Image (cartoon, rainbow, N blue to C red; front, side, top):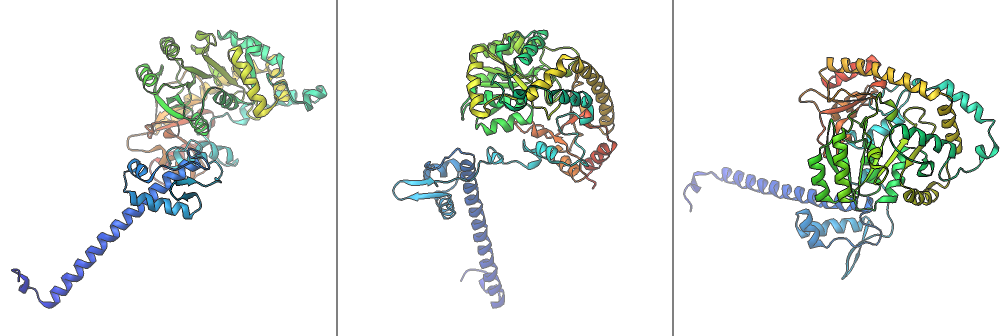
Length: 493
C-alpha cells in the first residue's frame, strides 16, 4: 500500500472519499453551469439577429461548426442552443439542410438591435422617461424648452386666425413640397446665413426627425455605414438603429470632429453618410471652426461622402457660426431645420433644403410614407414668422437662455460638476461629473426622486462618456433638481 495510507483511520478514509466525491460534483456542476451560460449566450445572439431582422423569416442560420467558431464555443453548445430554439418555435430544423428562421417573427424591437445596454444608457431611455413623465417630474435631461417659454398668446391668436382660413387649408391634404409662401420665406431666412436655396429646393416635413428619416430612406440601405459625432444627439443613434446601418463614431472636439480620426474613418469604413450639428452641437454646445469645416468638406468631396447638417438650434445662436451647407452650396450637404425647439413641439413643422434632383426623389418618398403635407401647421408657422412675433420671441429666448446658462453653470460647479466648454448659446451644458462617479448610476438614483437626467453614454457610440451628463439649462431652474442630484451623487436616497 502507498505510504501514509495506514495513517488514516477508516472514518477518516470515508470522510476523504465523501469530500472527493463532493468536489467532483461541484466541478461537474460548475461545468454544467458554464455550459448553460454558453448555451444561453448563443441563444441570445440568435434571438437578437432575428428580432433585429438581420435574419429574416426563412433565412438559413449559420452552420453549427461556423457559429461555434464565431461564438468561441464547442459545436455541442451550438447544437443544444439550436435544439432549444427549435423547441421554442423560433427556428426550424430541415434534415440535411440545416436550421432556418421560422416563417413568423415577433414585432421589430429596436432596443434589441445592437449591443444590449442598461436602460439608463439606452438611446430611447431619456426620451421615454421625458415624454411619458407627468407634470410632477422635473426634466433637466430633456431636449426642449418649457411650455411657459413659448409664445402662447401669439400661438392662440394665430390659431384663431386659422379658423377663418379657406376650407381647403383646414380639410385637404397639402402638397408634398409644402406651402409655397412658407418655403419662399425659408429661402430668404437661409440666405441670411449664406445658404443659397430657392423655394423649389426646400421641402417641408413634419419635423426635423422626419426629415432625417426621409433622407436615410433616400440615401442609405441596411448594412451601410454612417458616421456620427461621438458624442452626438442620442436620437440619431435610435433612428439609425431603426434603419439597420453600421454606426461609426468620430470623437468630437470644441471645434468639430477630430479631423485626423475622421479622415481615417473614411478610409477604413467607407461610409455613405455623415450626420452632424455644425453649430450649437447637441449635446456639447460646440460649433465648427471655419478651418474644420473646410477640411471636412474637402475630405467629403474626395470620398463621395454625403452630409446631413441638422441645424434645428440655429435661431438660438447670438452670431452665426460657419455652416457646411453655405460653404458647399447644397451640393453634397443637405440642410435641415425645424420649429419644434423654438416655437412649439406640438406644431410639427420642419424642412429639408437640398439639390433639386434630390428634392424630386424625396417628394416621391414623402408621398409613399406620409402622402401630403400639413397645411395647418405650415400656415400657423408662416403667420408667426411674418408678423414679427418670431423675431421678438427669439431675441427674448436668447437673453433668457443666456441667464439660465450662467445660473445652471454656477449651481453645477458648486457640486463639483464642470462644463466641457462654455457654449456660445443654446440650451445645453455638457458636463463632467467628479472622479469616480458613473452618470448612468446617478441618473437611476435621481429618477427615484422624479428627476430625469441625461447620462453621457446615451450620446456615445463608443460608450466612453460614462462621467458626462447633458443638462438642459432651461429645465434646470428648480432647486429640487440640484438637491436630488447631490443626493444621487453621494448615494443617498
